[in-house]
Length: 576
Image: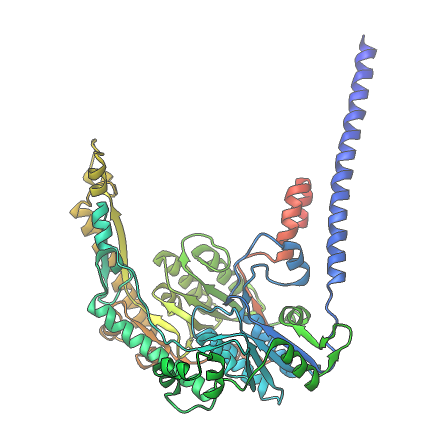
């Protein structure tokens, strides 16, 4: 009997070893196949060096952003080809491609296609427009084509040497404005009351929930802001196209009559007003490019390379002492957050990592944010202050938006640079708390119970707010506002009274903010890099490293495969 048990034991042991061996072999084979497949994809998609007389095609049919938000699909190709996997186009890639192409003898021109371009502000358009101008200074032409242009798409196309439009297209200028829905009556009918606690006459974010229309202060602020932005916007286009001042406003005013005169042909109208240089179909565009460039016999097209392919060939930044760039884009949230939003912990960790990196000699914080959590904003600001204290200069570069909490982030910087059309300021604080006691009464639902203190149930949103709780909130909001004022006064070397005058929750353009001493200079992202190099005593060739909140696509792909298929020790090893 004992020998039988020993035989069964040995048999089960070897069966178990065999199964484990087969399992590990299967896992290994799966991983080998995946790795081989990835390598094949990489090798088959390697982009050859562009030949002479190649056209760099900048197709901006996407949302142009400072930092692309991550997506979980398409990890493999994004990993191996060093492309973002979100479908967005990152500003950094466009700028790097344009500046590299300007010095690349193989690139002899740019074809700019703006169909489908989406942007969230004007400052990001200025960055690309100036990069196009830098390219043109080398003597190489920029050609723009689209089947139609809205005003923001046209803003970039106006910087082309030759601007083409499809014969069935149009150029549409509309101007700026903002209309919001107001919900006071609807909420009253539902029995929902929104309690707005704020400090700042112009802090209008919560108004739609407590009123049926904008306040006079909100209308005044919006009118001042949008008229200033529009004046700069249309002037920039008119200058780029050598049009007389006021031509855009005149075109809008006379649009119905002018269009009727040409029997509704919007493309001919754009040509007659010199907004475009010629009406060209896609086939005609191809022939023009072949005639004036070099035909690609294999592709039966003009010789070209796409933005993504060209960026994938650009060398990685070299090692050595350089600048860390941290992008703070989106709403500021407590805790951790992926790219495209700002997590207080996540972004503070990035600043700390840059500070502790001996090769980082300066930090540039690129901000495009409407604000958000005050606590998260302060976490990030503290890390920036510690970076300054460690002897590393901090330069803030403001993009489309640096308002409220976004402005708070700039309060620990050696220099603050904004675009003329950055929307910034909004130094104010508010809290919104809806209560649904009216809705509960309408539904015939009632609450009741006991508490040991009045405060233990004071935040119950199904009952009216206790006046004492409202008083606590008002005190907290007022304290936070005064803290905001004092921090701004200290950072900007102003009196608290002077700051309060231009605060009150009001937003300003970058130009206006400079006049009120809320920023130091007007300029581009390139100007912020230049300032950081000078302050850190770095050469112009010092490398620029982006500190992003997510692991690289390759690392995410390895993590995804490893966590699914591999034993834990191997996962840990591959993830390092």
